[in-house]
Image (cartoon, rainbow, N blue to C red):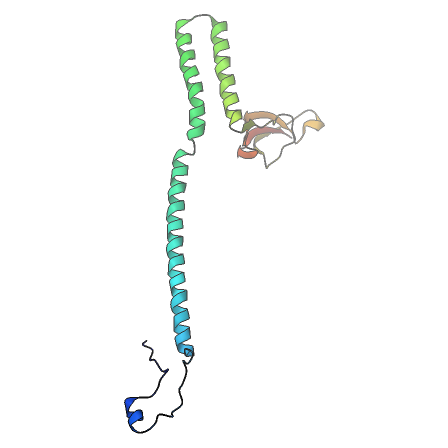
Length: 179
């Protein structure tokens, strides 16, 4: 909207008619409507900028999330490559040697290495046998009668080991419970 300069409201016609002594009106403040329109335009601009910034943020975080998902297991896989190399060497030794004691020792070294590698990544095995059955940790496969009253409600056997990853359960232990 175009504003008119009203500092000197005298027109040439007023001067001709002798209206030189007409009062001079100073700048009037903007009307409420003009103020509201200006404020609305300012708020709309802020809103559009904020929305554009938010869309950029969403796009950036989605891209970062996809990259994270694609490379999430990379650290574990790289650490397991050494174990895979040891497995290959053990397989060659199995084919080349008939000494059972040497083969058994080599395989045991590979097993120990994989366990230590997994532990270094935060994996810990759940100890279940002899513990009281806990539905938060264990999945009961079956119940077997036990001769001792003390063994009732405890884990007698472990069918599948349970695991924690950084103290969070990633697999429940499948167990046999005494009844």
